[in-house]
Image (tube, rainbow, N blue to C red; front, side):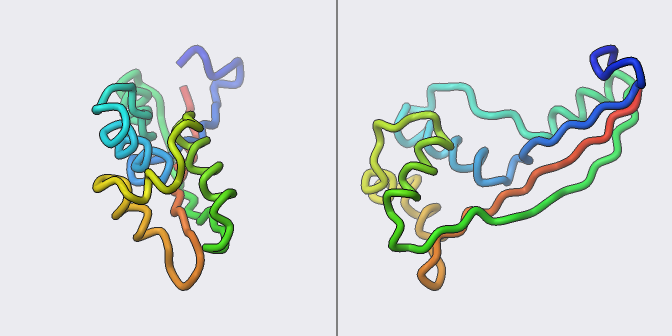
Length: 126
């Protein structure tokens, strides 16, 4: 906990396991990289590690959607490619794959793409 500064207080904002960024990346690795690659770590693990070191942690979640009209396929493709740090897999392939396709289909509702994010703010005290 020495890394949180002289005041002994730090703030960390990071996605939880169920957030789009983490959930989609795990599916992407399984679908297009044969499961190879390091998945993102969710805030839950970071919080547990801090608490195991004796830090006092207060947590609060923020939930929001990243959204775009269904017609904005180029923007959605670019967004998803940035989520997985790979611009070589087109949206069409993601939609067709049996792992990522159903996930993405669930993200389209009433003509809008919606990607649910859940970020946990951790106020950390040494």
